[in-house]
Image (cartoon, rainbow, N blue to C red; front, side, top):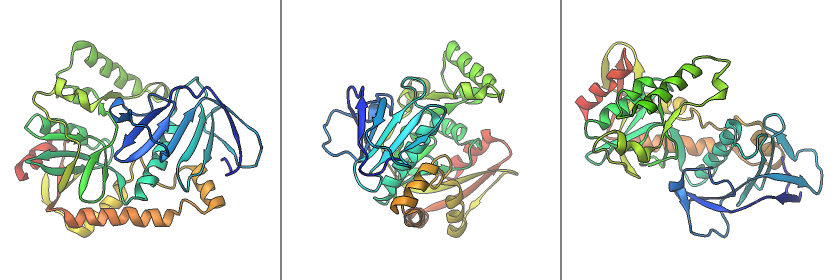
Length: 331
């Protein structure tokens, strides 16, 4: 961790790129930090976050400047309590960004959104007749399959796995659709694409090899090439919450108290707060982040979401391929 007045000697900054994530501005010298669609040519004098990759040295040594994320990779964090947050990262392999670093970055992004009463949430979002429908469930329950089935039946796409929300509207977060062999059957893919998905699934099924390869990701902008007449949208007014659950076939109304309880549990999947040691240490020394305050803001967004929705459903089926039928019947 980097204390406030420690100077950094930096080399190899290179070209600076500006990203705009729904009003949160990020400056970086890493062109693959986010998809190109979030890059902006507009100069930002004081961005919310600065992320620099390369080699760096410290002019002054302190006890809590650096944290090792993996092997020889190093990270320095500065100015987390104001703007711009400064993140210096020296990857172990050239300019390759590891999963641990991305997880830390997204946790910082989530904290900055919470300061504006917005939160990142683990949920898919589609629309029908301009009404936003959130599909909420643990990982591997069947959100992606349900989304693909409904897109082929006239629904529009906003997000497959994560959204940004203020409790009333949903916005997409840069993340590709995770596609496995079962999902590939719902898409118009060529032979080589299907083969790559099959090979990746096979490798990922072997624990010792799974760290060497990632799942197949389909960028949302490519969906129209694989599903006819699908429409991609950039925001949606949320009207319906649907919670998916494996078991005997059932669809029923879910009361607001139970819905809020489930949101508090599942909304944080993959982008939680309070998990990265470096952020906990920063809070210990500087008094920020105030995790209790941030959690209170997050729960208030969930409450607004539950109270503003017209309908809340629990959808249960024994097979992940069948959730869409129940949702189609009630929408």
